[in-house]
Length: 267
Image (cartoon, rainbow, N blue to C red; front, side):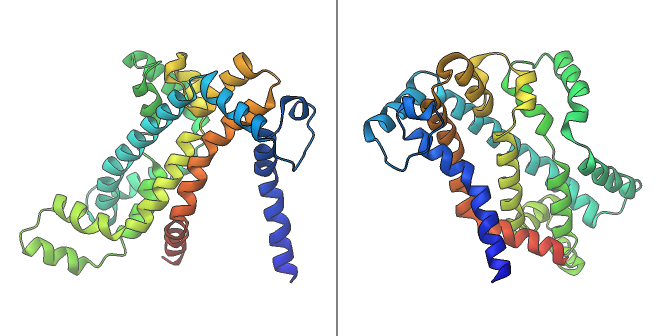
């Protein structure tokens, strides 16, 4: 009872901001502006808030930008991270331990440490204020490499040797054998990547200035400053619309997400 009581209290503390956000998005501006909380839903005020969120700013464009950045980043992290993880797990070459150590060190470095050199790199490449500038810092993920490495190294070498005897190339072994085996881990990587890129405000605020390229968090910031001001109803409606896709995606994939980390811990 003590354990479940503690979990219940913690859950309420975590859920409270989301409940407050939902209630504010359904309230008239005069109540939301005072910070009042009311369980009485005003359909007309709720409709007006969500219409304002969708029409006063290019919120659909912000959401589309977030989708483009997340899909491109996830695809590049799998395309680049899976071969590297496979080479580290099953390969034998000079410098293997050094590369693995560098991956582990990269896990410890906060992204903000690399923001200045990444900014100058994007400037030299001429990709600032573009989709490429938003995607470049996330092309490869140390977390994705490490998680896939943990899965790949548990695959028996005899299975890989049998595939090679049958004439299967290492590239086919990777994409037709190793990657399907790691499906739960790929789900966890997808959730971590999408949540991280979707909620990222630090790098987009540096890399882009055009409104048409802003991802959801930066777009919400512009919405607050330029359009909504102290109109918390439309602001909370816009925030809820940008948060809902992540919540839905996690609820749909939570079992694989939890299983992948449980398997990694067991390994």
